[in-house]
Image 1 (tube, rainbow, N blue to C red):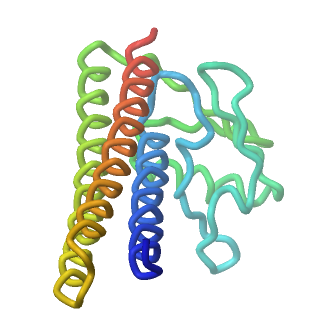
Image 2: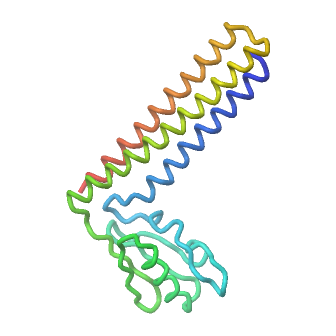
Length: 187
């Protein structure tokens, strides 16, 4: 295998890895009926005039399966954090007890669970499209290399290897979606 093929394979694998990481991040934001501190990832708070991630100004944990607790490092941050959680439009209702913010995570209805499963499957499909695009880009590069003098056998071997990578990553996506579906549908 030539250095060019190895480089294309490495870039393709990196692109596919990024698709899996992105899917994992997206699935973390889909609520599964249980309290999860990652639900609050991405919430930004006004911290002395600068926009700062919630996790940078507080400790976030889950004392039980139905509660998320946000413990600000500074008491004067309670109100801005509470507002930021409400404005994030996550369907969560923060309660301020003067020292921390408690968020009760309501149980999901059957209909809402089905909607969340559809959302998870859609995210999985987006990741599969991204992986197929990475495969297409690699195959296009191999075809260009063939025009530039690469042997047909090497091109076919490289295409087969990229296809194998694609199948492997697609099955990983399927597993992630199945796991999330079980997580969502479990009461």
